[in-house]
Image (cartoon, rainbow, N blue to C red; front, top):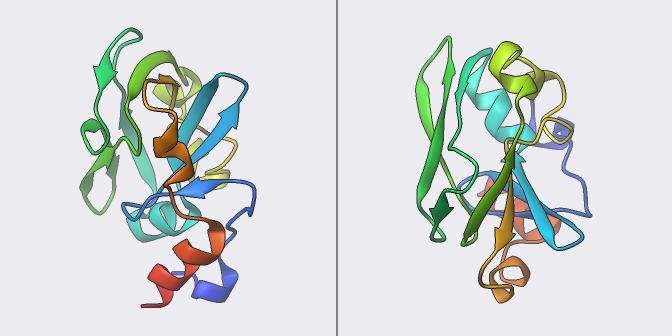
Length: 131
């Protein structure tokens, strides 16, 4: 496992304390898991994603990630409707391990815009990881 100092945590993303990241892309937001989360899970072998059109409230479970170690739930860091899922992960879930920020899981249209700004900055997320 990586040391905290070895983690890649882009400053232009927002983070949740459940280890998801969020990135604005116009009027939608892409969501995935952080480098810390993928590192802790180990080799990811399956990604369960919701359907386009599904709606979730902040904190709801929207899918699962299965690794050789465990199955982990993934929680949506802000309320919204699913507008896209990363279909490449269906055939190649290991992409999340290789590039957790390029391998987004879902894209949503947020329903409560202020929830994005309430997420953690890189520095605040790093403080949580450091304990």
